[in-house]
Image 1 (cartoon, one colour):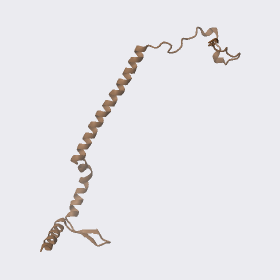
Image 2 (cartoon, rainbow, N blue to C red; image 1 turned 90 degrees about the horizontal axis):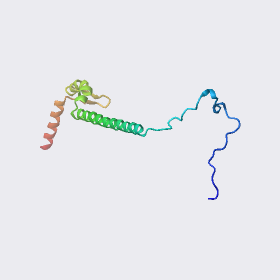
Image 3 (cartoon, rainbow, N blue to C red; image 1 turned 30 degrees about the vertical axis):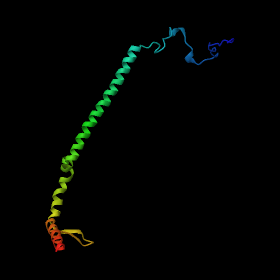
Image 4 (tube, helix red, strand yellow; image 1 turned 180 degrees about the vertical axis):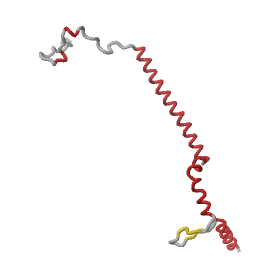
Length: 130
């Protein structure tokens, strides 16, 4: 270690741009921004930010649990689905179950009332047992 390192910056070049040139009319140079940091305030702000994030995550989890359990209960009970989607088609479906009509006219498939269809199925099973 016979050689010592020189940590002195190199002198600035002769011609700098106007930003580096200061006049005495500007007054004393300003202090460096954030040169002194208040650790207590910085720590408090950090704790507040972490607390707000944790509280928001907890609120989102609680909301999701409440929303999903309500949605699951509605789907399991079929109340919402029945009221909003099935009820408009219920009258037409019940009418189709009680009357004759074409199911597929090109293939010659007809629709018979459900009571008549049940009776025919019962007859066919009774006839096969004999």
